[in-house]
Image (cartoon, rainbow, N blue to C red):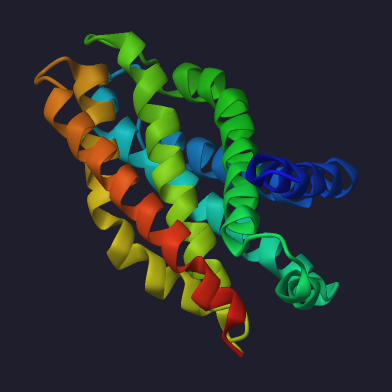
Length: 226
């Protein structure tokens, strides 16, 4: 099997498990919709459209960040519960293929939630992007990948810890702050049209490349650790 075959095998396995249980997508969808509805009730977005545009980027990414936590913890917990990690240690498959396959699966789960959330978010916050709306097609997948890639890595790092649900946000939040800042600012730039999103998009691209490379190269150490 080639390296790509190993990645696709891990990806198909995670997609098949999620298709049967739908635990991750249901949890994330419920959380993000709850955040959207609760914050829309805090003020009237139709009465203050400029304020809605300025804060909606931050609300969107904070909701996605917290929602992704549920999927990240569950994805590795299933591997540990079924003894798949011990089998992976003995298998000839590269450890990085497991990481990339799982990160891609988590990316698809969060993207599916974003596609469902987008029309609801637009409706509740009365959003009409004043900037280059097409840039959202780059910002959203890029920010989601940077968030999910780091989250998948740190969820594996704390997998054997007693309080791994608490450990994941403690590890992930400080590392993800530059990514979140760039994603929020780029999204706000598109929604408000007050400033160009190009600079923040470059920061997001650099962050995604650097942390994806580091996570792929060091994941074997995480898998082999006791």
